[in-house]
Image 1: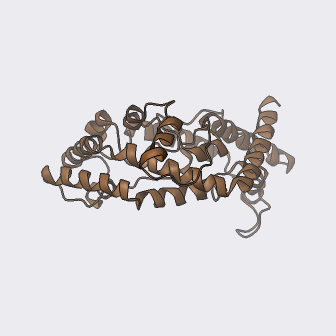
Image 2: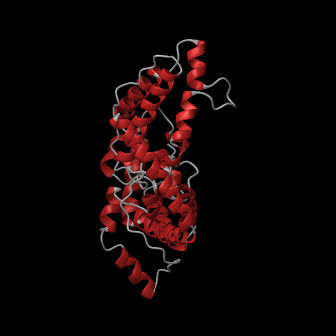
Image 3: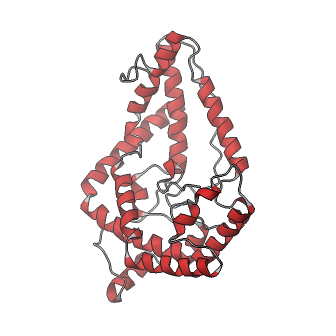
Length: 298
């Protein structure tokens, strides 16, 4: 099962104290500085639980804010359609079922919960997926035009034109979109840099040896996660066995902890280099959230 390292907005927390120091090595004085800046959280425990936050999350909407924006977009589409002469009632603003912490790191470095691995392998919770599908289906049906004129008003007169309500609302709240935002670009760049770092590679080597000792041949952790054998409708017994062993070997070699700490360093460096662009993006998010709150009160 493919993991989405950017989580398609399933995980973006916001309360982070940012540091803008340059790249820090793993030795001596620099290592002590890293430990001091991260002393507010038990990294080992947090890495096991998946409750980590990354510096760029301060420039992105958090979980509650994303839900506010989702509801505001639905309401804005309804108002837009009424302005065009159509009765398009948005569904009741039901929150999307979600058992994540709302942080960017949820699933970013692979699985970490042994109990879930023992139940679902690399698959998501099927009950949660079903609940999410029902909410999304209700939203889709309520905002789909029944006539051709209504459909054009909703979707636009042509694919290349942005004259439909959906596109109008999308542009209206574009400032809060994480897609192609400076923060997400930094997150993706830092992820790749951390993965290529010697410290992370060393942790991967320990994990690979641990898995091999248990009879599994994978070069690095995400290869197990992305194994095509596990792209089935529901988890197989083999998948569950691999996933549980995966979690055990990750913990034994502190894979998620080291990967997180290393990416954290790279993000801080990139944030320092792109602070102006990030502050502009933060203001854009704030404006979109302000408009969303106004819509919610109306």
